[in-house]
Image (tube, rainbow, N blue to C red; front, top):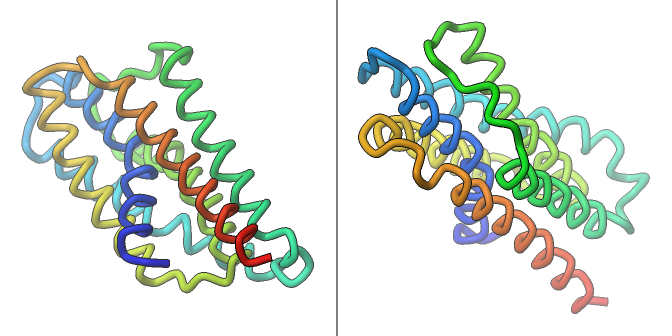
Length: 186
C-alpha cells in the first residue's frame, strides 16, 4: 500500500478517537494538558496495537479465504464506515466523559480501536505488510487525539458528528478502492 493510502486509512481510523477526544476536552473539568496527553497515548497506542492483533489472527486463516480477501476487506471496511456514520447520526449522547481514570481510558481506547482490529484482519487477507501502516496509524491517531482534546476544550463539540461521518466515508472509500483494484486485475 502506498504512503497516501496508509495515511488516508489512518485518518479514517483516527476519526473515532478524535471525536471522543474532542468530546472529552469539552466535558472534562478542570481540563489539563496532561489529560490531552493521556488520551493521545492511549488512543494512539491501541490504534497501533489492534491492527497487529487482527493481522496475526487474519494471517492464521488467510490461506483459506485468499480468493475472497478483497471482498472481505471491502465488507469489513464498508461495515465499519457505515457503523461510524450511523453512530454519528443516530447514536446516543450517553458516554460523555467527565473525568479521566485509567480504566475509563482503557475502555475508550479499546472501543475506538475495534475498527483497527478489523483493518488488521483485512491486511492479513490482502497479505499487506503491517509495520508501516501500524506506525502511521498510531502516530496519526496520537496527533489527532491530542489536537482533538485541545480543540474540544477550546471550541466545544460543534463538529463532533461531522468528524465521525467523514471518517466513515473515508473507510468506505478505501474499501471500494481495494475492491476496484481487485476487479481491475481480474
